Amino acid sequence: MSAVEFRNIDIVFGSQQKRALALIDEGRTRDQILAETGAVLGAAGVSLKIERGEICVLMGLSGSGKSTILRAINRLNEVARGEVIVEHRGKAIDVAHCDEETLRDIRMHTVSMVFQQFGLLPWRTVRDNVGFGLELRGTPLAERNRIVDEKLAMVGLTNWAGKYTHELSGGMQQRVGLARAFATDADILLMDEPFSALDPLIRDKLQDELLDLQKRIQKTIVFVSHDLDEALKLGNTIAIMEGGRIVQAGTAEDILLRPANAYVAEFVKHMNPLNVLRGTAVMRPAASLTREGDSVVLDKHGRVRVKVDGENRPIALELDGRSGIMAAADGDAGVIDDQRAQEADCIVAPVDLRLKAAIELKRHTDLPILLVDNLGRLAGLCDDDEIYRGLLRRLDG
Image (cartoon, rainbow, N blue to C red; front, side, top):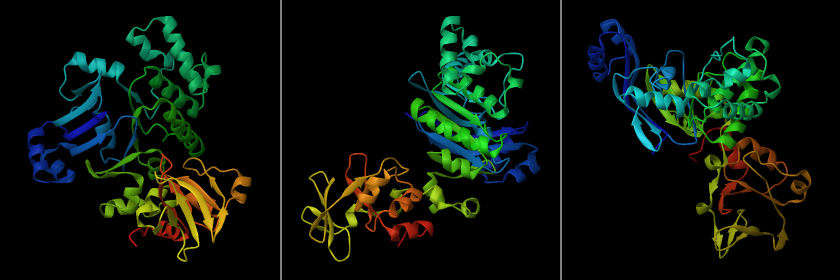
């Protein structure tokens, strides 16, 4: 079961919904529908699955419909046609058509929202703002205080618990909004351009903090943004919208390398692939490499080989008949101790290694980087040619 699923939803604002829906079925544009009916097309034919524990970024130009469909998840926007399925208490509930009691329960326990302009109550302290949802839920005071203290510590605001919102900077106010959403322990967080009102340095810092928190809390996050850099940084999946319709949905790599149309291509044409591409997109797959017995040949002359075990895990390096040294780099950032890197003949790194990190690691070795999966099995190689093709976004040859 997906955490959230849009099933062919249409959202129309105005009194002539039936006529507008008929025009949607005819493939009319938003402007044409507005001219003929006076109704505003919010979303048309939107279908999208958002899996548990992922960050899905809805992005597009202003007015593209991204906030409109976000607000359908907790029915702040009514759906004219289609279904919005939310996993609630282990069941698939159609939020668009459920009864009021079920909707209140979903809003209280399953879906929480972080607003662009923080949405804080100025007459309440930081502590009281963070605990507001728990208070509405009827959580006992002692338990509420325990949860609030925990969430304030999570966002680094313990020492500001007794302050009022006007005493906080914009970035700190946004942290209060995050803590309030986390306090309800909702499985699904809706974030409507939460960082757009902040200056670039604070925005970048909060993006990093959100990613760090996500590693620990593993919530399903639906995040609206008009900033492609932000979307590519945060999103496990990205859905790009235009005129109320999703024109492409996929990973950052999919969208960068295979834009669906001219609109998407225009979005990504100035993007730096170093910040997006990973080893999986640029590597030479292990299946395409030359093998001789239990060894994989790493160079065209057959002088450099890596021996693999029965599970295809690299276990030894041979350099023109002598033993070589392999050193492991950690994480998608390719973290490795300088001394180990200098001593190594070959570096082993995770297959989701970022292209930027691959370039850094290549400074330490003339040999290809060995990319391995999460079980340590050889997945492929990343050498100079793969890096160059990735930079040129030419991965078809």
